[in-house]
Image (cartoon, rainbow, N blue to C red; front, top):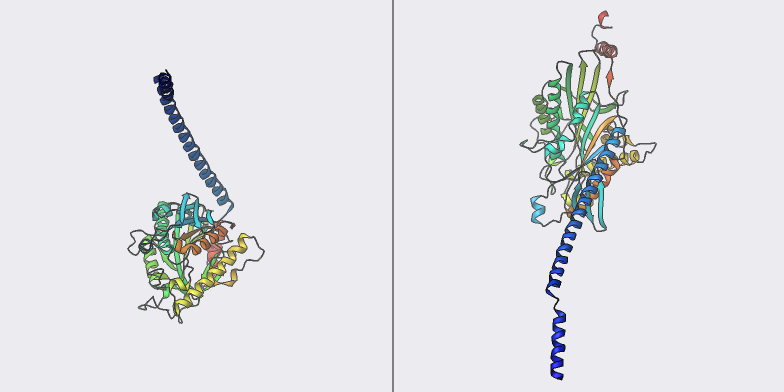
Length: 438
């Protein structure tokens, strides 16, 4: 009997661990229900994140639009691709685009985020970048002072951004601007008369040199002897517009003609090979394009200037392997960029004195930073850990530039004033002036 009782008890115990058939179905239904609920929660979370990201992006966009209307300098950030050498060395990528307006950098102290008017990833094309700068070409034709300049360490892609590749399969901002300018002119020839002229300079070892009068046949990888060249000085007119006194100015009637002048100028620019770059720019390139527009309706004249500046890269001699003349060039480049940094710091802090006169570079850019220009800065950065210090320096530099406000104004004269200016030019050149001219 005891055995039977134990058997019954054991039997009940085993049956008690196995739920009834209806119970199994119930647990299965509950599991399916929980899985369905989890899926819904995940979808809701995804939508919330998408909505938050979209709203965050729109908020940045509208904020940047308001700042642009105030005259704030617009700052774009461009992340270059990882090079073959960096890939082979297994360099870690520490710079990432978060959205159209944010970039993050992984540092030993944690992640840092920087916000700009636009961020371009390594996949962005030259066309993508120019699309967001092209509207300023119209502004220069309308009589505004416009400046687009690139900044970054040696080998970060500044010259590729501004000039493009050698074969011009991927032209940069400069050649694209030439084409865009004459496309606009062509569309408006029935309403306006246009006159386009340009000067092209380099600032090499703190000397301004006219690239239109470089010595023919000289190797542009070697220091040039410009002793016989005319002295170029930076001056400002009454409206605060910077111009190069003594520099040769050439007229152009087409984009092809302007690009041909540009190519000629570039052959006289100082470049050399460093550890960071096969063709490293050893000078700052300054291209100034003046556009005089005369209305055929009321005779008013507007004068715009488009300044395109490819700054030489900041560098460390230990990284670039600079020696002798290259070391002297590097020191001059870093000194001028340091002076530019002092100007940016003073402007962003709204100090009463801005040290423009400390360098020829800051004098050249006086109407572009804290002046009357519509300005875009493109900060170019490397994505790799090996360049982390220089990348952080560049991004901090660019963040300060973003705080600067320019007093943007149009350079336009009425028909009468334009006529009187022509008379003054004639008198100064010794030409006779008829009564009808006055």
